Length: 195
Image 1 (cartoon, rainbow, N blue to C red):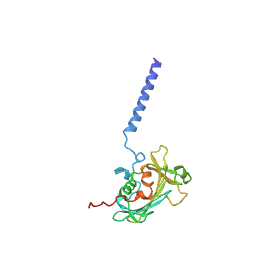
Image 2: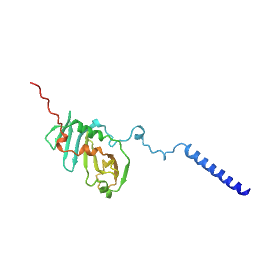
Image 3: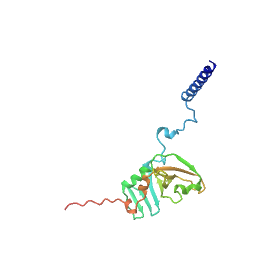
């Protein structure tokens, strides 16, 4: 009978330990180290930039082929590469809406790894000017490993040796910025009055 008593004691001890672990893990209040929600994400997810879309006053989009400069007056105007012409409101709205995208996970990497993310020869660099004359930059790199987003830097340090805060932004940024100069301008033609 001594053999039967030992396994029963071991099973009872294991059940007691399991019960204690369950109670401790699932019935205690969360500590500050377990809570990783920042104050901004408690109400809404953090965005790429903290300003509002309506505060954007100017955009400069530099790609491999061209640089487009847009400025908001009463409506958006293309200042370069064409002479001043009205901009396509839909194209500009698409880009400014993307600039309000939620901020995804940020990866801290050394500056020496810039080329791994396509940030040494970026797809595009977007410079944003707000109504209070603050300047912001978004640098778009290459597609991430599963092709679901683009690597990007938001307001990177001017120090070329500073660590990089790389994040993933929507792939829609590529179609929003890779356009020829004519695609940025308003293509609606004035209506002809019947005679």
